[in-house]
Length: 626
Image 1 (cartoon, rainbow, N blue to C red):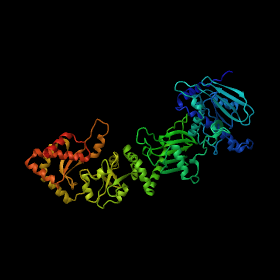
Image 2: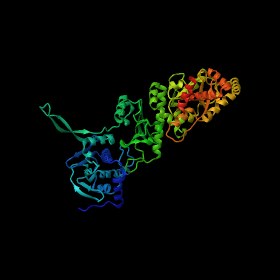
Image 3: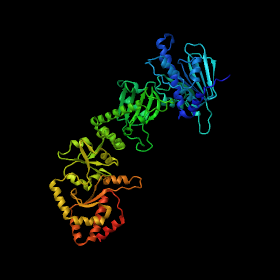
Image 4: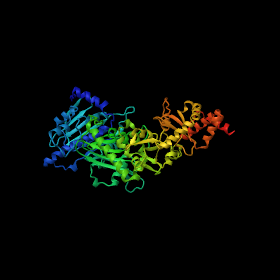
């Protein structure tokens, strides 16, 4: 029989689709099931106005049949079917969508949502098939028709016989070659998993005969195989149900099953939105971090559905980076998809949905913070680092959104507090929000630089994550109160009288400090009298933008360029060591240089900064001891 040739542009598109448009060949099953669902929708629509249709919606179904012997996979429906003309028109011209035409002819359809509006999904079957056969009978017609093609060479349309209306799509699978294994699509459990993954919420039952085993009658050890028809899909998505129909257990079971978490989420966000953006969303805030969350292997994103059909497993554009921990899905019929239905066109609608979801998540986190503090702190231990990165990234674009959510350990409360709570406890004349950075709470608590602030009864925020100080630098202030490191030059705690007294003392010992500075060279910017020290002999502080903690963090990164803060060596005039320094300046300036080196290295150790020459430091101490 002579074949009808595809039009030139259709041949090109078919070749492009098979080889380029679809990046994942298993998508073919999703497309064919979606087409079958559309055929059922069309017949159901006619049943609303034609009492002769005779089928109830619950009678409609899709059936998948696997035949390993003939290497065929068949997808059948009892939908509206096609006439000879429709068969030739819809399948003979690629991208001539019967579904789209149906919508245009029946303006204002509200009861059904046609999925296949692109006219190209059917041809994804050629990714796995060497021959595709379509046997169809239109509803109300006596004659059935068969369309058959092996791909680019064209197709034939012949008369056929079929007992009832509907369509059978028979795929003769390709032979295995090299790493290409097409046998997997003859495995009923593989087919079941693909239906569950992509088409679980098609509104009609998808049926398939599954092989089971049972004990033979009268036997205690022998088994026999038998076939049992299973419905593979759930049909009704949980996110399209009313909240009043669902319990926490329903949400938790869905979350654990779909997102492979053994722990229930801390919060569930179930929303349905209509208007400028129409969509359903079901989001979850996890209780713990995935094992690879803070690694480059972690991929953010929400599952994206169009009318219950999975389009993307992870749509990263629906979540900002600072909320990448959120898991869940969005289902919308308004999104602009490309012809393969695998990728989204980046349009205004997508951005609008993403913005709405960001507001929803922010509101839920604030509510958790205010109403369920213990739960929020559990969340923050897992994902607080991501919120702080969110403030630091993009030059602080998101700082106003995120700053009410971040927390730090408090020297007063001995627990995590928000900055808002810190401000609420500030002393009347307090100018700054004080903070100190270090590797651990215990280590920060013992820093010499914290002594003056603590002595004044002021609260200090302890920063233990690398990003913390960078985050506060981006914020700059909170409620008009600037952030101030306890290691910065001026803490703003001295009265005018104290400043005058300090200036006089500094002038009195100017030559001593100058001598010590000379011995240390460019290791320090200055040696000065300290006002922040009470019991400790020495500490380092910094002038300028770069703090000592920031210096450590930046230099720990893989880079050839090392940075250095403007280090200041501060000496406690009330410590016994200061009398020794004064005496050495008067009688043994060479030994004063040794003492200066030792004190500087001690200050480095306190800060957790490596000593440049540990051997020289050790020898200097031994010489003094001897």
